[in-house]
Amino acid sequence: MSFDYPLTSREQARLDLIVQKVEGDLAAEKLTVDRAEIAQCASIRLAVISETAGLSDSYLDEVKRLPSVRNQMQAREMSEALANLDSDTHRVIARLNPSQKLTLGRQLEAQKQTQEAPPATPKMDAELFAERLLLLRTLSPDVRITTARKWGMI
Image (tube, rainbow, N blue to C red; front, side):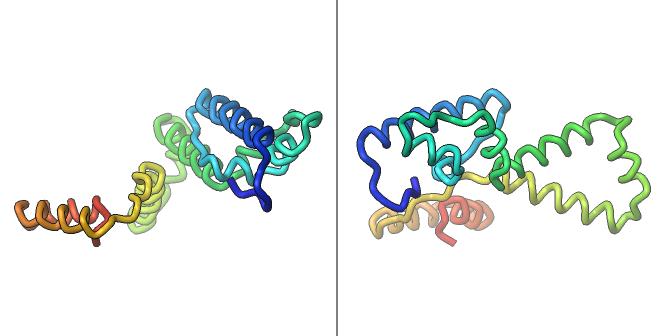
C-alpha cells in the first residue's frame, strides 16, 4: 500500500479490513481492483488514518472511478450492449464501413485481452531461467515461442 509513512499495526489492521470490505463489495458486482489502488482513494486513506472517521457513504463511487475498475465497467457495458441485438450499439455498428468495423473489433479485442491479461510474472532467478530454457529446447518451434512469451522470457 502506498502511504507516505509506515503504518502502525492498528492502521494496518484497519487497512486490511477496509480492503477486504471493498474487495467484497466489488466482487458482488463482478469487479476486481488491485489492493494498492484501493489505498489511493482519499476516503479510504482517511478511514485508515482516523479511528473515528469510518468509511464515507461514497467510498464505493470513489473506488469505481479508479481507472482499472472504470475500464472493467465500460467493457461490461459494451459486452451487454453487444449481446442485446436491439441495442443502439448494433445500429451504430451497422452504419460503419468495413474498415471502421475492423478497427472497432481490434479495439474491443485489445480491451478484452488487457482485462484477461495474466498477472505479471515475478523476476526469474538464473537457476529457474536455465531450467525453463532446457524445457523449451524439448518443445516444437511454434510452441516454444508461445511458451517463452507466457513465461516472460521474451
